[in-house]
Image 1 (tube, rainbow, N blue to C red):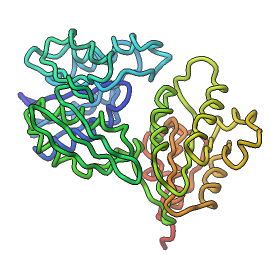
Image 2 (spheres, helix red, strand yellow; image 1 turned 90 degrees about the horizontal axis):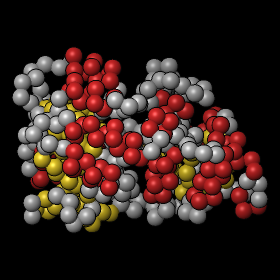
Image 3 (cartoon, helix red, strand yellow; image 1 turned 120 degrees about the vertical axis):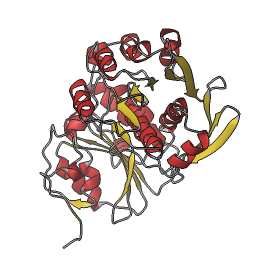
Image 4 (cartoon, rainbow, N blue to C red; image 1 turned 90 degrees about the vertical axis):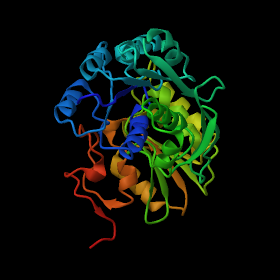
Length: 382
């Protein structure tokens, strides 16, 4: 690979979106290999074997399923820039605590060379604490005044799309996107900081990110032929991250707002009570809450009159899709979130495509509308 910049990105969440955004900036500068989504050790080795010296940048998302994964991947990649997004409770069964998760992710910045750059989220105390662990220069990003790359004036209450100001080195630019809500603002700033770390000017970052769309199933926006807007957030749903994600619906403006939920992962303690508590919370800021799959079973105890016409449960995927298809309001907003093996994106794509596969669980990594087993064709086509 010679001396080209090698950039690794890790974190509990936001790393795929940050990789997608940074990949767009880098690709506008030169040929870039973007290792995204397929981020485990075996996939990373496959990606590296495909490379050659014609690339200008190497960008790789790095995930961890168990202790030692980040260190092993970093030792193979030998990145000059390491980006850490957030510390959360993904893979709760493997790491249990925030502290253990932080120790795992910290390996990326510990192994950077002295002439490298550690790009750290200043809004996350667990990530910011990694400053002392890195032999490399540290570049921080976030909303605080002390962040090197600072975001402000974040706007994104639907139907307005996400925009924000970014300040670095006394210069400020405005970035306008095609993204839903404000949750991806930190992922955008991580991408900008990563680009700055390899010498790309701030104004070029803003130009590259203008109108950027979300990565598939990471709050990607879709519209059905009937005019319904869907937010597809069905790649993963660790319990700790669900409420911050769907809470973006609170300030959204639409004729009707619905949240569709599948199953959570990495749920500490009692499971059933958490689903019922989530339903009660979401009723405060949307019109309807729909649970699909095995999560619907936990709602049977919610049988009071206040839940009638507002909370629904469908253990069968087809029934859920039919329910949403048969009760439509133009320009309504529906947010779908679930763990990936449920492929809840079918409640989105069944309104857009003629789909044939509705099995309850599936190990396929590809989104359902791209799966060859589904044979999707646009609704209304010949």
